[in-house]
Image 1 (cartoon, helix red, strand yellow):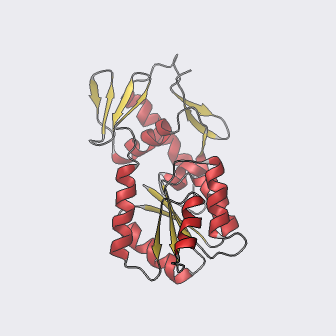
Image 2: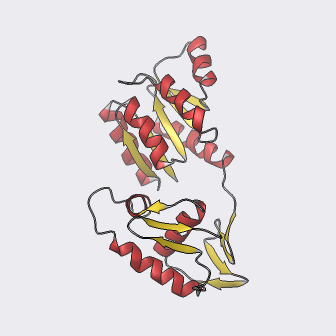
Length: 221
């Protein structure tokens, strides 16, 4: 699961990043409201931790802008504000929850887990004859199970979750490999070829198609 932290206090964001990564989450951090809004659109996080007081755009403005385009991603406000009126403003802007600073990491973690339980994604993902059981991490072609490595599984799942959307090499290397610096994306080709071979994909039906110079797309058309 991917979490975007929009927080201008580096001490808080670094603390949250380290703690949540230790819990197995993929973490992106933005230090102001403008960058946070851009990353919310680009990274497609599964949950957003949003500070109320931010430079460039306030948390309230960021929340309202996100909700104009996205009605699903849970947004949790991190705020020192605690009046009833301010809480109502945050909820009206589209926030799902809020937690008052200072807060315990354990309480925040439990709130995050609750929202992920409430926003569970489909247990079965499909692409043509391919199906993935996400809870058991099993991959099938028709009724035959295919054994993939963890990285192959993560890459296939990533593409199928974004079915019909071109996934750039940079986004794949950042989201699947969790690498956020210049890196040879040619490694992706190796894994794609391995997946195609293991799934015995028919060359006449390009379920996983290469978009030259850009990346890949999972498509049934």
